[in-house]
Length: 372
Image 1 (spheres, rainbow, N blue to C red):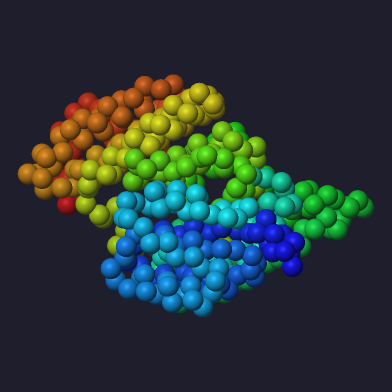
Image 2: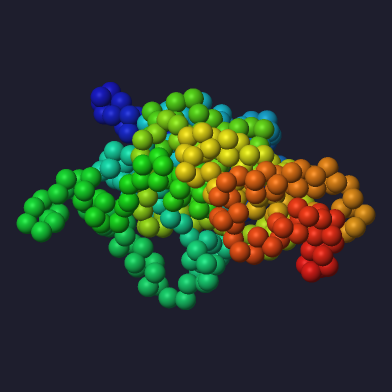
């Protein structure tokens, strides 16, 4: 019996879920975890002293299922909560889940199989954009799915991963488990490929990923960032891993804000996006120099997005953020100065950055008039 318990602990997946005032949706998220076909998991719910009944709901669910572990903590941000979860996790594998999202029932099974078959350090699946409604599932272009065809195709992708056990045939020869899973629906990336084809192509999420605990070492989320912390966590982690396996199977439902993030007014914490990409630029330039132009172009675009948010503010309020405008201007100049960066810019941003660097005040005024 003791040996059996130790075996389960060794293969356990520790799911880390920060939450603050999430009573409206955390129950659905936890239920999706309880419905997993892979049952060897623990769920650490890090509650930042919620005041809306979240704490009571999680405690009730923990009484029903001993795998749910409530942790009441001081409110000091998502990164700090995830780091505390990493310190307290007992599993051999780690996963991060946002409390307003949910999982497909086979997600844990699929990602565990990918790690076993490819010997990668990270297994990543794709995701649906979801508005929280029963039939409100969107594809990556945010077009509402009108039939069940894509869901059936997605289920087939999961089955392909799970059946890639090395007994499949390629011509007349049996193939190894690693080769079988690659043939089916998974691609294995080395570090350089993961940076160029994935991280620097907008895929900087830390959720929908299963991590080997042994590969993480002491890598933690940067608590001085409120935006871009996921990306920097993955960038830091790159220094300790050898390969990443990625599947097109969509196992994660990411709840979208139908009002749109771009409609939210500017706040100083948005400048963390620039800070995080400046950190990424230094790391990429040192470790992956062939991607220098790409990463610096992203820095310039991030600064332009922040400047655009400032531009949409009323004139009197916009004047309060002159320091931030200067920071945006400096970041754009730094980005464009890097070799290859201008060529990597989307066409629309080539004109925008030219005008903004030449005359920031004029650009902000024109952008304000255009958007408002």
